[in-house]
Image (tube, rainbow, N blue to C red; front, side, top):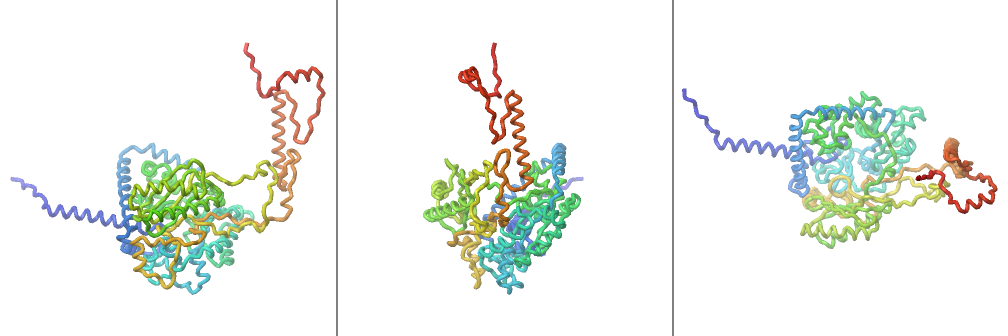
Length: 638
């Protein structure tokens, strides 16, 4: 029986298959880009009930064709290629014997478990829609209306506006498309810093060494407070929140857990005006983390979230089955971070923000597109002046100077130079950064910029040491009680934190600028408004010293002199006894060492040594024989 020859598929069918596959790839690419355009504030409170697909579609269509859109599209394609490489590597690893990696991961997890501390009560306090809440105090009629604070970019919005999908970091014209009735209010940082100072004064009563994370959030360790006042953590935090509301008329939410990472997650669970406690129990923590989406963890953003999802990790509980692959796929640091997320581990140390070692000091500003070299130099000089103010305030100098620019295409470039000496003066900052700018102009003819910034790294402190305290002497008192800061100052801001565009400058108010005009601004890159003439620019992440308690009664100024070393010590019986014990132990050790070499003990400070008459021979020998170090042994060579 003759076989039927195989009939090749028509060429048109092959083209249709290829076209279908290409269409699927394009759809997937568009889906990932739409999700990417949702921004970093996707997990903000009030967004859980929002149809994010509708929001992403509006953002996609509104920004399509703009420079910002084109740049984000390029970044999304680069991320897609990176994920393809990760998946290819994963397929290769799964063919290998990973017993050794599995054993190493289990050993690391065991070591982490040993370090678990379940004794602390860490609290994360977060003010609810802080800027909007402060504005509502002055305009109560806004209570039932959707409104936001900001200009070209929203800095915050109330919870009514969030139901429409509006959030911080969103372009205002996009927010108006999501919520046509949205009202925009101008920023007023004087009001915000004043209200934040009132909140900080209350926080200091529960933990004087609380840690500010921004103008409207902080970490506290209330373990000692709960012990001293015989209160449970829930009672103490509820009391704190009630006190804040009574004194400031704004609401705060809180998370209570054994470490800062979990407390941060918990504070977002019952927003607004609520609190959530995660028991200090390992099983409860593991259960909590098992079903927690990875994006809910502070430190996992859009990029890492997507990479994890592609390999099958959607919740923190999914990390464990993939533990043998994580080191090879993401590197050592991410591997350790993810395993700590799986276990629900984090830092328990809380300290004032100003006590952390500062790695860099920088300032940057966004402006309308400029291409004039003269304007570049004027902006560079202004930036150098601003950076000098920041560095003098931080009391430091830097050895490495970094110039950052953002092109009109939203491409970011950085260049750095190591200076021959530590610098902080504006003239030096300008003179060392100008050659970098000139070189960029040569590399990119016709360069157009929309952002410029300077940053100093490898810092050297210029703080004057307290010489008196170094030698154990009583520190000199400078100033009066009125000099003690309450943390209500207005330190200068260095850079815009939210979004790609600067929310400062001439801020829109009623009548509204118009959706069409703002859409044109985004497409032409004019949403980042030119900075005003304010002495300080704010971003809400300034490091402000904690409020200091008023000086106690004058008896604290009395000092006790140590009978051993005669140095003044604070009037505290326990500390004074510890110091005496230390001095006595020093003297005992000194005497023992001297006796070990056959010498008389050295008398204590203030005790005159007994004099001994010498004979003539002794005096004569003392003139001719050099004094030898008793700790050195004489060596004789035969």
